Image (tube, rainbow, N blue to C red; front, side, top):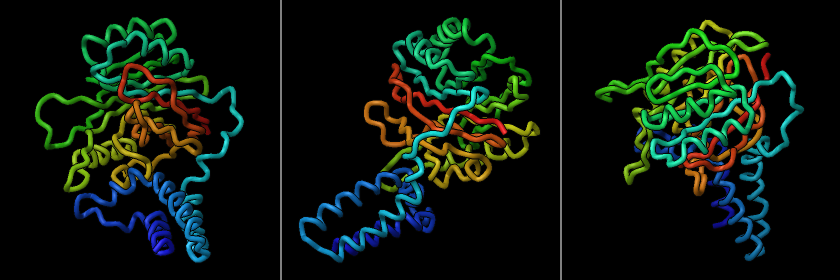
Amino acid sequence: MSAACAVLTAGLLAFHSAVPNSVGRLGSLLEVFLPWLGLAVAALFGVALLRRSATALVALLLPVAAWTYLFGGLLLPGGKLDAQDLLVVQHNVSDENPDPAGTAIALADAEPDLIALQELVPPALPVYERTLAPAFPYHAVRGTVGLWSKHPLTGVRLLDVKPQGIAGPWSRGLRAVVHTPRGEIAAYVAHLPSVRVRASGLASSWRDESAGLLGEAVAAEKVRTVILLGDLNGTVDDRGLAPLTSRMNVAQRGFAFSFPAAFPLARIDQIMARSATVGRIRTLPATGSDHLPVAARIALH
């Protein structure tokens, strides 16, 4: 039985894309928690030792190899940092954050070049603007998302990623050109619709539709280098984000599970780039949000 479970676990890791999404989006649901199948491997290893089953131990080589191929590289240390790399921070600050000033100070203390925020609500927005202004003289806000920058911003506009089924006002995307010492970068900030895990499976149709719209916007972007910062409500393994992950580079090192902050299970806060490399991604200390901030170095090509 242990050997059979090991083979099944290896199959799910190696061929997760073959799990259909037609019923309850089970494929996406599996992909959200795909790294955690490593715990199943550890449990099966313990069972194999207790039973002294050589067959089960040999069979475990399959899921170990599959997990290592998929995620082993994320455990490696980051490469050498270049002084000209950009440091960026992404954070869903929560519309119920009791301490926006403390959150802003904590993010600024990381000394990034760019800070992207989501769930900016009217009562808290002036606090973020006032607190971040000394270190980040340039900023733009559209709807509930914002971008703070040490470098000048131009070409700021609303990014329409609203699914057709959502009625009423809904502005969760912006695009701006950042004028860095290394040249122009198109910065995208987005907050895709939430997903829900239900008895029937994963409810993600609005998120998937919004990801498609965002992917089309990135594909149409004329500026060569693009950085995407956002709460995308999905992991980079989730096929629902394929319109983005098929076009952009993701972090090469680090897991940086960002949600929920009290016990992080997945990284749904993402930093991606086109014509640039996302280095090691990491979480920053908890703020008053239910998300953890994430930070990464961007090496420009």
